[in-house]
Structure formats: structure tokens, C-alpha cells
Length: 194
Image (tube, rainbow, N blue to C red; front, top):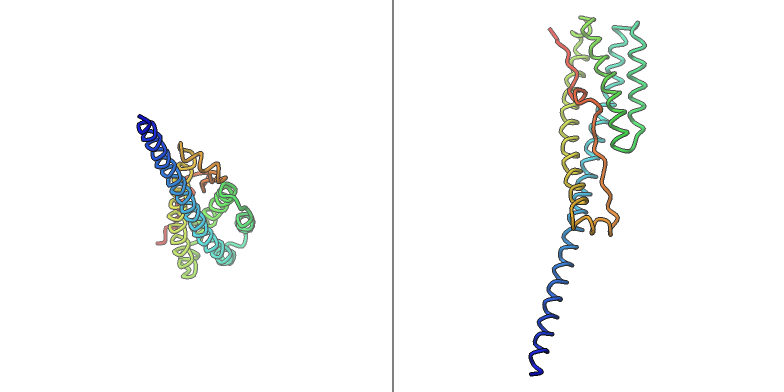
């Protein structure tokens, strides 16, 4: 008769041990998933940063070309240069998105000047820089979509139960999305070159 309670006790110990092992394995899995998504988000942010720097490098060259054709448009040119320097300052994705929106809007105005100056539209350097700007804008849009997808997955994991408990133990916080203030600003500026 004494063996029945001992057998039940052993079954309980084994059951609790298996349950404890499963909880530990789950915690390890969630932690590793948080780390992987965090690294992907960092890498995706790096890709965005590279594309933004490529765009920042093109803007002064576009300004110089336009300046030669439209010297009396100095206010527009100064606005673009100012927006470029302001866009390089912010660190957070939300602040960077707002600064990039301002730069994008001013860059569109700069490109729109080409419509008023047929010689500028025909300039090979301007056309080449415009094509490169379109390529950079496309790459930037793809990098932004990837970053936001990774951040969405990370934030979802952090918010879901029971992984939220693991995330809070390891002090994992949701990340900001990189969003433009106006989705139309994510399109590359268009110039009709006849």
C-alpha cells in the first residue's frame, strides 16, 4: 500500500520536471526569437541609413546643377540644403521620418523646377542624377518596408502573451516604425523629359 503514494509522487515529480523543462525551452525559444528580430531590425535600420546617405549625397549635386540654370530660385535651393542638413540629425525612426518627409518635399520642388527650364531637363548631368535619385528612392522604399515588417514582427512578439512576460523579463521594448508623414512622399520625384 505504501508503493501507491510513492508511485504517484514520482509521477508528479516527473510531470513537474517535464513541465519545467518545457517552460525553460519556451523561454529560450522566445529569447532567441527576440534577439534574431532585434538584430534584423538593426540591420534593416542600417540599410535605411545607407540609402538615406546615398540620397543626401545626391542632393547637393542636384542643387548645384539647378543653381546654374535657375539662379533666381535661391530660396528653393536654400530650403533643400537646409532640409538635407536637418535630415541628418535625428536618431529615432519617428524623428528621422519627419525630417526625411521635409527633405523629400523640398527635393520634389527642386525637381519640379526642371519643368520650367527646358535646358535643365536636357542637361545630361541632371538627367543622370535624377535617374540615380529615382533608384535611391526605390531602394529606400524597399528598405523601409523591410524594416517596418521586421519591427512589426518584433513588436507583435513583445506584445503577445505569454512571450510578453519573457520580453519584459529581458527588458525588450517595442521599436518605432519608420514612417513618412505623407505616403505620397515615398514616391520618387518625376520629371517629364521630352
